Length: 156
Image (cartoon, rainbow, N blue to C red; front, side):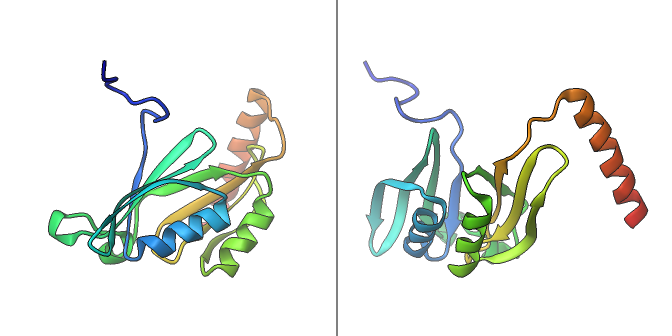
């Protein structure tokens, strides 16, 4: 019997539209350590691909404007940020910049126990990369969150 949800697929999988999917796939494989599971060529464009990272899956395809499938650069930016936990955020961040990404927020320790930074890949997608460096109990997290909000208020 056919399964309504195929084995080896998470319930939610984002699909990234890019102008230059083959190059983007190489970037995600080389920088973030993703594994390419499949690729469907459609007349010189990538109509669909699947990239795995741990138990996560993203799909990547070239833009198809005639179907309303366009990437962030065609739209003038993205409201979506992908978040990826990695073993060594500093190394991944440096590799992303070396491979053509642009820094959006430098890597630094965060009050909630992660060390993180944010970059925009060459196709306009925003990525938060993080390494968990500290377990913070709920009471301490609440205190730190309040202090961070107060500090942000002072800076505006």
